[in-house]
Length: 620
Image 1 (cartoon, helix red, strand yellow):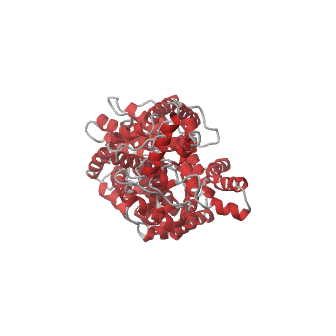
Image 2: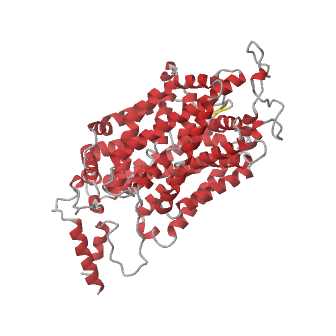
Image 3: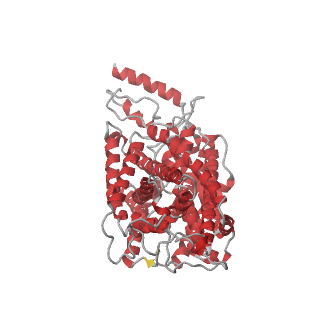
């Protein structure tokens, strides 16, 4: 009997001791030490560079305030419902992205694998932004900020310090037509060594950026290497400090001359832009990107919660915080854009080149105009690094959680997790080196457009909604949430999971395909055919895993085709999800929300006591 009892271990909660003959078994999965750690970790994941430079950049690109219309539509119909779906799924199953989807709906297990591939793509290119910020930070300790003057070795004769002295009394400009600012030349000529096109290849690696990239990866590794215990502590700093600096920069920007014109441009909509499908595509992408949807990270972070945590209220609070931060960052950006437009005597729509460098052009210019500019530059770029750092290492934590949950007995032993994490970091660093070359910015934009946004996220969101709304059952999932929180979510969420979310995402995806045009990479460069092909390969590398997994599952499941579909559209019998959880303040029973068998259910407390007695008897 003693030999048979350990088979019961896989059905017991992680906190119930398992029958082991030694101490060499896999270590515990872990939980958040407090609710604050969970909230800060999720806030750190979803509130990042997407709020500070991506949202203002997309507003700038898509005609100002008109961007709020599709953004709010996607937020209400897709963002919040999917955010609640993923967070609740992780909390209910106590599993990472891959294992959670395989447990509740085996046929759609490819959703978990696809999200992990997207995380890998994100880890490769997202961290390059932190390398740029770290290089800026290293230059911020000079006696005079190098982007504040034209006396550097990289400056050209066209470099001009823009100010109101460059204008005549009637407002006409005295500047040459090809005049550029020192902040623009620092960004393009010193940081990026940007090439004019991709015809000559990517060019040599910038050793300065490569070193910065290596240092950022090193920090990420040590933030994640001990799992949720180290991650939960680091986010106390990385998730709170950026708000202090954002508020300071907002106040400074609002006091600059011309700030009012910038804010008006930010809020005044250009209605004609709503006819452009790219505006809707960018809005959907921004919601999915900034909320961490379809990346598996929300599921992984939620899986470390206690079973009776109120994930419903948490989701609303975090969504509100995320969108409010984006809105606030837009004021900080556009107030400085208005000042720069007045300073240069140009229209605000032509002040800065659209692209990921917006925060590295506008914000440094604002910092250079403050008293003690070196101090503010150091604080600002530390903010940028912390904003991106917590998003990066939380994504890594989500990836490691998913892999560890798939192979717990293989990875949760000794230092295997740390070694696997090191391998992932080194590989991502080596691939990322192509983005620290003169043509690296163009590769970065291809990754940004295709790998972690656009079609891939829209398709995954469609299938997530179908899996929960129709296959698993929106009513059943709502019951799961009620079982955890004590009350049911609003009925509109069931409506979104079944109809509205997949309908809106499908319409946007089809609309974007019909009106598709080659990607513009800035400086008049249009993505060549091979670059577009590379982009679609990045998209298919994740999305293709959905049909591949479904086909694999159908081929390896016994029975007729109808029986196979019936088996794969039900929760796995070997994963009694409700048995993994029990509240600490009252005797718990199996959850009635996810009945995997028709057997009578007994209290977990009694089951665990019987199991422990059997362990003791078997070890005698």
